[in-house]
Image (tube, rainbow, N blue to C red):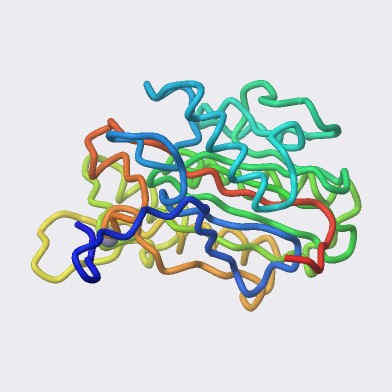
Length: 266
Ligand SMILES: [Zn+2]
């Protein structure tokens, strides 16, 4: 519902809204669903061509999003996400969608790498030493598979220093809304400690805190706690975001992005 001023409904934003982390110096952003051209369940900044949205709308949304970085879609490289733990390297503009993988990193200046999410965790990483950047997609499978550490390993292979990394965990389904059942509570407790299970007032079922689990993985790997920024936004609570669970599977995807190379104009 729109707030109205003098009986005139304000126009929806035509510019993507990017949420940024105070820790990351490289140009980056976690978008809301605002500022795109898609309609219906994909309104409006859907960035996935495989959820039923019109391809022309998705292309226009990607153009708007990359334009916010002073780039065009040619300079954006993503992966075909499969809830696995493969980490892919983007080396040049025009690569588009790499093969199957859930993390993309690059050291190519000016290149944007990104991951699509709608409740899963978008994780953006920069290494202050080398300038390498990475975008990681992690649902619960990726969190327990510690894809974030697989990405760290690749960055370190390329000269990154774990102590110089900065990590931002973007809007995702938070513990308030991530109810689980079956053996997941036991598996997560065994992997990360009992702190990953969060009791919620008035809720009988178990809730997991996936962002907390990622923080635990990073801490064990030697990333200082002060270098990890877990943003508070819950995609399920907050309807500014696409949420796979809230919308029962019919929804769009946010594309979180990070660009290699500092740019003081942003
Ligand atoms: Zn929530």
